[in-house]
Length: 51
Image (tube, rainbow, N blue to C red; front, side, top):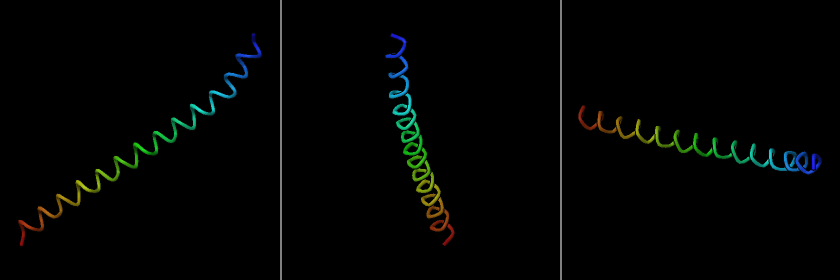
């Protein structure tokens, strides 16, 4: 019984860790892209109003 729990933790934890890291990276990348697009769109508005 104790061994099966140990095996479960050994196999399940790395998968969860990898999934969590992948999720964080994807989320961060999407947020960065969205933020960059937002800044660029504001720069375009400022440039258009300035000219």
